[in-house]
Length: 256
Image (tube, rainbow, N blue to C red):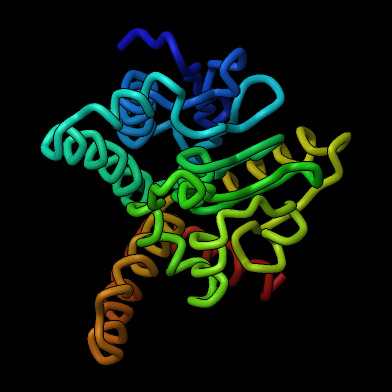
């Protein structure tokens, strides 16, 4: 697929996806979401991929839906609006089911649908001047699909305040709430993100994949079922080449 609104490249194990509409603060429309879904799917199939790094071109990560998309939403019928919303929900599900960690590197603003995309990533790294928010309520709208992820990421009360207050919060506040994993100084952000991705891609691919899948699949499990799923994953992990080599290295180190 030829992309016009994102940039996709994979190098040294890192699949870099860049939202590429800087003149519109990387605002979302149907075409960009479609391209993003295709790039996510491509990176999931690529055996060279160890980490996915999602960022925005220019000064902002993503400002949410563009004006044309908002106008189209206001004029569309319920079935068309459901199809459009379902496309975003499919993107979130693809990111959650991706076999590799998906990192959002957020500079500038991540608002509305843009904050939703960042939240759908497994890990959020933020520049200290970055801003996050779900301002949909201010125009009578609801950040509906992302709530399924937000509710699992922060406390219930924090999630409620974010979605009904509609306020923009700083990177530091987002970190306090548990939405953001790391906050870096603006002038060191790119270097820190690169170093973080390098550390993550050095981990065992099979262990990372099994860990991510088990953790997320536990959402709908009872305690007993989660333990049993852990037993099965534990047994599978022991049989992987990565684990066998890792145990051999560990034992050699202990005996040397």
